[in-house]
Image (tube, rainbow, N blue to C red):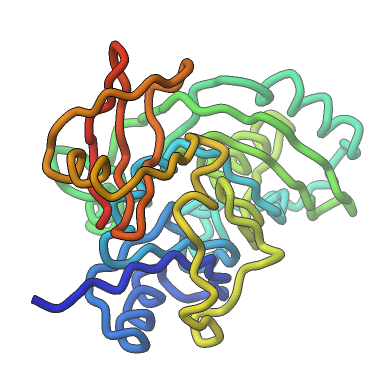
Length: 286
């Protein structure tokens, strides 16, 4: 059996390339078939796309709930069927916009900041009776409006020129920036469409140290304890203790208020859970 190539890369995805094509490029470069990513980016969007390969793909689940930060450019007076610039134009409104950046801030604070139910775009990867929503939308099916609970945690208005708004937002898992643009436009008595989108943070991954897939080298790979340090502690165990856990057995170990943590050894990593003075292997990442 071929040994897995366990890597974690912080990739800077360029515009107009689907996330799965970045995965294909990875496979072509590193010859490792088992590859996954944290948080899909729409093809037109750019920015942070963390890639995990080999056994490190098992770590993705522990980061799926992390915050994301986006820089978005929204055009007011325009609405498309996808809520972004790649879609078919549905409506245009040419009348002069009668609001300024202060009014936009007030509307966001009043109607969007915090937890709320957000429209799920028809052109999305969510499933309806087992079928991707975007596939049904492309075939012309009329879909019922769906909403999901999301959180807008922070926002900063960078500039507004009377037509285009540049905004930075920190959001929860599952937040659609496209839906935010559409609904913001509605609250301002106009339309709103995302014309550019860049993810600058995805949990522990930041744009400042992201690299294009063609530029990364194996030594750029991040360590599990590095990316998980905000979410769980890391403990190093001796070989004998590690093997007990690796074989699926519990191990006596006192820990303070830590339900899950990462155990490391020269042989690899194991995510463990604690209960009553013992730890139990949850997921081996060898």
